[in-house]
Length: 158
Length: 275
Image 1 (tube, helix red, strand yellow):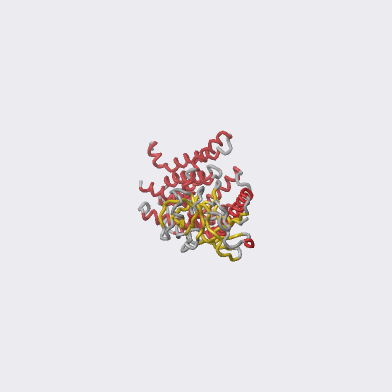
Image 2: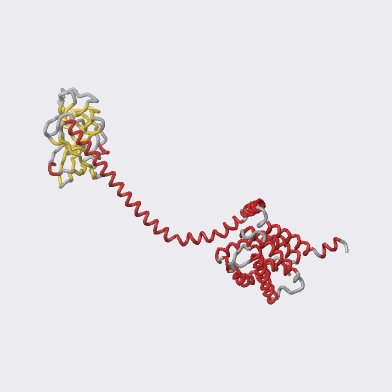
């Protein structure tokens, strides 16, 4: 129950932060905070949690950003599932693990996004949005540290 | 391995495939029929409202910041507007003054034609509070024809004239009026419709005394006091009415007269030119 409420509050705060960042950054540099959150959930909360939260967060992202509906649901669920395999297999508290996870997640997410965009032809030849991988990685690392601290403080993560 | 054990073991994978299939359904709604697309649009529109509170929370600091930036501009605009309002206010005052003056002049001209007298308008511009019942300062448009001792009257609609005083001193286009209530003012008057004469003496109040009335003259309470026509003042201009009768120290009868008009509210006066 405690985990559920903490997740809910964190999702709400990420929602606000995401809106705030979308006002500050142009669309091609906007960091994907949801992706980082899914990586965190998969690494620290569990495999099933990663998949479920990935799906819910993906739906929220799709609704709020009014993009090609279903893309982020698919991608974030996939990320949650893939990174969920690392749960209890690697030590998520290590910085090199976090950095590598973030890099990999960015690679998988934007790679799959690129492939789907080619399949459905919804972004044409404008691939400038791939620049946001950079900001996602930089700001995402900070977000990951904050998330770890918050979850540790509330005793959800040890 | 039982089904329960299989599900327990492969829970994330089952969830994953379930959610992936839902995601694919979502994705396929883009390409299938326009009916499903419309359902999707409705779904998106319905859930977009959940975004509004967040949008408000995020927008609030931005709006506040923008307002803060706009403050100096607003201040400048406010100062300009204040100056403009001030200017307009003075213009309005000026307009009313000019309009009132023109209206008064028009009225005086009409009266002049009607009664066959040469009349000129005069505007009270100052009254000293120490000499409130003694004198007042008037502004005259045509000072060249102005002379001392000219009668100053007050017109009250529809058709009433009251005697106010006489021109005392003249300086350029400004004249001082000796009010009838001034103790220095001694005006020969008579009772309306009766051959009873006397001298009206001011008392620095709205109560005046009509002195030097012969003892045999039949003065009654409520009699109207008018100008007598002696001197350069035309006869018959109303002043007040008798409210009390007494015997004065000089041995004559003395009538206490109360003014019939409000001497406190003098604004537009008329100067009467003797024929």
